[in-house]
Length: 364
Image 1: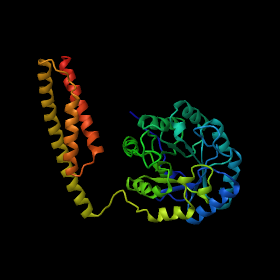
Image 2: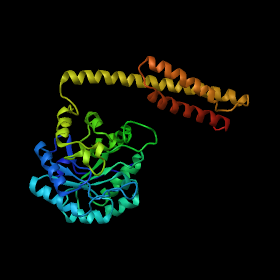
Image 3: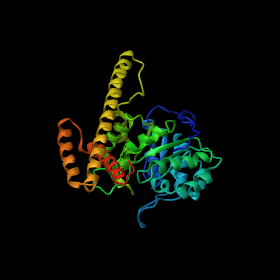
Image 4: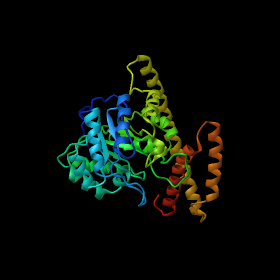
């Protein structure tokens, strides 16, 4: 269970604009001073207030471009001096933290390869103790809510209160049009456990392709995320890293212009009445579902006792295959996706097996 966090609201981050969604934009990597400044000028013209750029790039294999290093911090200082934008960069170790702080970087983020390692997070937290700089924590590469929140908690215990979670999707061995699977239920669970923790989305890393970014950004806005981090480059096709997922400042402008902003609620009496009626209907249906599940498990227990009396095994794979085929067919007729049905009925099946196993073990 996550501990209670001591967090400052986004209004206490010292940002010039906290209108949702807060947009953080800039190149995947700072490559040259000219590229950094050209991109910054384009973003400034859009009214962007926070400029991001990778200075140190953790790469999967050696030999890839791993960032320009500390010299890039001087370029970010120039961005801040000439445009007035806040600056943000990724830190992966204590050395990065000290150099970024020395250069006056305004916002830090911790990447997915770092947030997966509690030792690395603790070292960064210790280095930041007493420096309440805003820090965004990307989700670990694997979908683990406790690991993600644990990283936030370590930073919070070090005295950092201006913290946010940054959703960039999760690695998967399955083929997909997306670079990383969004698994939206994970950030939703993070927000359920820590509703005061701001949630940002990085649709660039989820997408891996610039043509998919707008729809992912809209999905995040629909889910009431607080902000977006979108990789933006003056010449993305010539980028030294992640070229396919970066957009030009002009394309970013189109994405942001197309976003449909959503409100968290409405005081409109018609809206409130309709919502209340529909929620009451859902509450009744939930109660009906619970009653149906309880009756189902009673029958499962009866089957378990019959199996025990006749020396029959609990697991019968053919029966499960039959259930899946029937559920998929009937679910399709009702507009329910196979993925959703698989999750629901797999959980029901696992509980059924567990119930019958306890009966065979004389525990029920």
